[in-house]
Amino acid sequence: MAKQWGGRFEGKTDSLVEKLGESVSFDARLAKWDIRASIAHARMLGAQGIISKADSKKIITGLGAIAKDIEVGKFVFDPALEDVHTNIETALVKRIGDAGKRLHTARSRNDQIATDVRLWARDQIDAIDHQLAHLQDAFVRIAESHVETILPGCTHLQHAQPVSLAHHMLAYFEMFHRDRIRFIELRTRVNILPLGSAALAGTPHAIDRFTVAEELGFDAVCGNSMDAVSDRDYLIEFCANAAITMMHLSRLCEELILWSTPAYGFIEIGDAYTTGSSIMPQKKNPDVAELVRGKTGRVYGDLAALLTLMKGLPLTYNRDMQEDKEPVFDASDTVQLCIRVVTAMLPSIRFNIETMREATREGFLEATDIADYLAEKGVPFREAHGIVGRIVLHCTKTGKRLPELTLDEFKKFSPRVERDVYRCLDPQNILRRRDHVGGTAPRQVKAAIKRARQILKTLG
Ligand code: ARG
Image 1 (spheres, protein in one colour):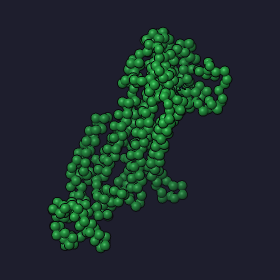
Image 2 (cartoon, helix red, strand yellow):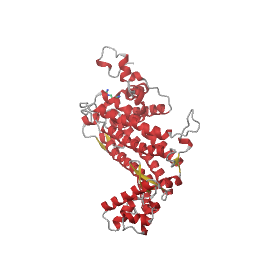
Image 3 (cartoon, protein in one colour):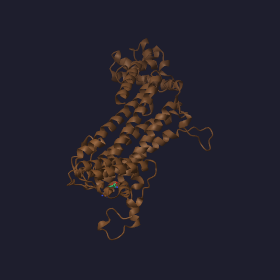
Image 4 (spheres, helix red, strand yellow):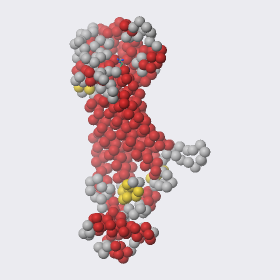
């Protein structure tokens, strides 16, 4: 097959170079967006009188037919034709003849690929936003049924203070909310049209970039042709956003893995999202959560690959940039699959409410509240902290829990302790006392659920 750019060459390309340089094995997935952009470009060329209206029409019809062929799997991509652009253009010329050879007027593959990828990224962002909304909904649903369910809240993985399961779940709602906002903001930077920049400097043809932008749904056109063909910031940002979302999923999965161990026994993950062992018949392993945790590393790798790829590139387009596709496709596929599988797994989880409550009895979770109690009675907090520290030490030596101490025992450490101290020792009360915006009190958590529902309604 003769090369599109073969004119100035006498010798043949080495077959290894073809293997090195082909990208259609991975960029064929951009075909849909490539054709959309080419149709808009051809329409503009016709409207501006750069090519005849008849040729423009033929191109548009031909591209439409090729799109259908691709959709039904009738189109064969040929690696000898390098990339998705050349494959489609070659097929167009085969189908409609000479008119097809005019499509590439006033454009280059450099502004073409930048346009395709921006269109692709915009659709992925919309899909991810939609998936994240479903994931958030899954957390709100759990929260709604567990406002009164208590479990030990931890710092350093050590029991710290009791919290409600609803409060814990809504922490994840917040994380994925920030992720959505990050993607939504990125969309505004993605949604700018590079087409019209041609190879790097613009084109002498009387193009109209604004009608192309409008047809393709872009908000604006890139302001500098050199930047337009060599900017990949939006893909780096895309991978960074995906990496952060994966990090959030991974933290969740780590908790689910811990909670499902016999040592915790807080949850049982549904059969559909666990697997067995080939040797140990009793096993029910949290493989899904582990795989999501593992795939997080892959997406971090994709981000690192892109940053490294771009760091030394002089303006403008360099062929190195073809290497951006596989990492960004991988990050996109991975994050979308992981969001969907975690969203499906969450409703399958059975929470062992009693085991969680039992766990709040260990680890002196009431200690901070006794210190707060003393502070309310006028003891400086720093002193109160020391007093309760000594009470806890006494408990560790006598093997007692804080609620098991008698009033006399308490009084030995501070005469300020009265009978009402026992109110601080009830975990439900401990929750109820944190009654401010952002606190774990059931009243506040119910309000947080309402806010979350409102956010889901507003953002869709
Ligand atoms: N396949 C190329 C890429 O992904 C398209 C742009 C090619 N441009 C060029 N001058 N070789 O980057």
